[in-house]
Length: 89
Image 1 (cartoon, rainbow, N blue to C red):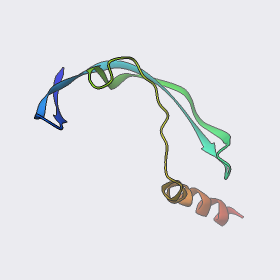
Image 2 (cartoon, rainbow, N blue to C red):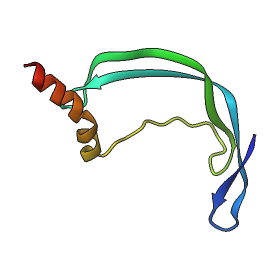
Image 3 (cartoon, helix red, strand yellow):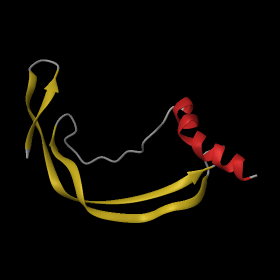
């Protein structure tokens, strides 16, 4: 599927190509206070119903990345789990 994307010079133009036929694998772990992997929540869960970008700039080659989260946001996301653990004690 050809999609329009915002550009600095030309506004919305056909700039990237997406597909809805992709495979993904996801692993999810709890993290301790020092960002070390803890208990496994999901391990190598797969799906064949994924949307991916398959072409267009400015990345013309394959790439892989890791998500990052600022410390304050990470604290807020973990808060319900910490609270639940405190109530258990």
